[in-house]
Image (cartoon, rainbow, N blue to C red; front, side, top):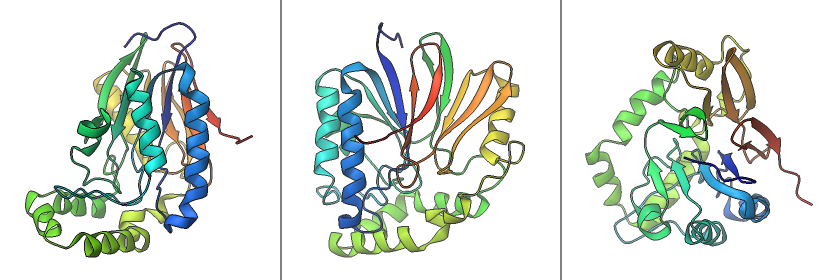
Amino acid sequence: MEIPKNKNIYFASDQHFGAPTASESRARETHFLHWLNSIQKDTAALFLVGDLFDFWFEYKTVVPKGFVRILGKLAEFTDQGIPVYFFVGNHDLWMKDYFETELNIRVYHQAQDFTLGKRTFFIGHGDGLGPHDKGYKRMKKLFTHPWAKRLYRALHPDVGMRLGKYLSVKNKMISGKEDVIFLGDEKEWLAQYARRKLEQQHRDYFIFGHRHIPLEITLSATSHYINLGDWISHFTYGVFDGTHFQLKKWKNT
């Protein structure tokens, strides 16, 4: 992807909109909307790297209530020709085709390689990667099985959404609350995963979410692991100008 002069590529993850309640989430949604407004004019592309919602499930003719302002703004981006890329996280892993058909947003269920400007990127949410997350890896295989989706879809949406939201907040295996602890440069398991991937193929940047901690760890003289933090307590995002990548904190003014 070529990056036009005076344009940037932006990255953000782990907004968890809808948590812990819709009313409490609204203030964070407003912050994020103001951020989207502030970057819109100079955005070459926008990467949303998972867990935009705290829970998401698509029935054939029903999607979760709410988030209208956010979805409308994302549609405005794509209507203006600004590509938006969405990576499914552990909280919105049941996303299907609503974003693609209604918002013209490309949805990825696995980490992907990109060439942005003259730099190479490996981008994904980060859940289930690396040597840890073994319990979640087993759970993900079960939850993403076609029969699991069919059985859940058999629930009335009022029941299915209420149950999903409850489990998303309460179940630590899903919510990952125990993961929000910095383990050190050598023990961070997504950094370990990035180092192993680096042995197979060089990438300039490994971009992940999921950990809820803004991090930049040097993997080699020419490669870096970036964790984007979150929009719950850190309000951090990434910006790439074609040459340099920076982690920044949004300060609503």
